[in-house]
Image (tube, rainbow, N blue to C red):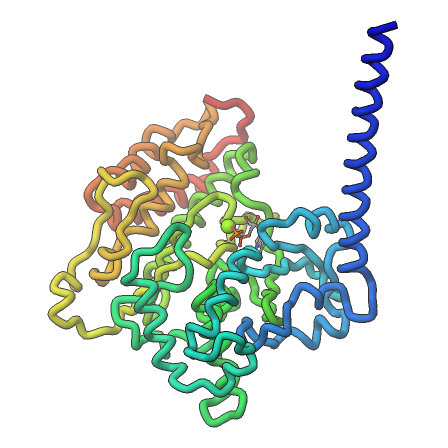
Length: 411
Ligand SMILES: Nc1ncnc2c1ncn2[C@@H]1O[C@H](COP(=O)(O)OP(=O)(O)O)[C@@H](O)[C@H]1O
Ligand SMILES: [Mg+2]
């Protein structure tokens, strides 16, 4: 009798909890459906936060969004409910898969918005539209990137680091400007640029080094409000640990090529990628690789005349092997005309001590001794610039010789 009563009480409590949980779930589900549901405005427009413009990324792709040319994935509603990263997937009318990126967490936007009026010395109830009347935006861009370089910030770093001298930023942003200086819309372009340099410079970087010119970055679709549209470029390296060894070698070669491109290919700038996480590198069905997260990039201006503050400018900067794997001095990178950062990072991704991409090695792969020696040289040797070329050549040779046998077993 007594145990029966206890059981009933427990069951009663348990049922009540389950019912409450179901109610909470239904409320949030229908809330989301209502919020993002098919009302008159296309669903996707609700993600843009257009009312914050010109403190936004721009409006280049808004007409396509308004006219339903870009459609978020219908199956993506769970993502919309629980999406801390603010990444959404969708399709264009022509069936091209795309990614919609807000480029920051909601709390980062709040922090930015809270500081907006103060940053421009406007009264504290200012509206973003008031930014169209502020003066000195060009100087402000220089101050911002200078601040990002010199003031040690809490991790993760926010905003673009452009170095060594900040005045080069005007040439850097040129490809991202839609209007001439004489145009009425120039001011709003510049506020857009300032916003991106403050929150996430990715849309600018994608226009400076476009995929159409062979850079290993996503095809850029445009921006609308606080939303960026890029092409879907494949699956992250982090989920491709078990693919065929031959494919792994192709990808390995392309990673080294990309490291060299970001370091050498641009006439004016070097791009040191600071976040080589295997989530940020994606691979398509042709094994082409793309670096999808261009938030944390150091842009080095090669065309400067070093003043007395840069006595070692013409020397190369080598990563000190005693540093922990993820530590690399931005200050030092910015004081030298060339650093081996990207090369080290690529070799670390392939053969470093943290879940390297080229592991496990198949037992019947007969060239590992040579390959691993080169990788070790790249990680620990004294001249990475020399080793990387040998490594590229060696993998290319393995691939062209067809000497990479089909392999299932691993070492
Ligand atoms: N263009 C793209 N193609 C394919 N997947 C992408 C693309 N952009 C982002 N992703 C996926 O979304 C994830 C998060 O995007 P990312 O730009 O790295 O944002 P975060 O700053 O949150 O890391 C990536 O790890 C990748 O899996
Ligand atoms: Mg990322």
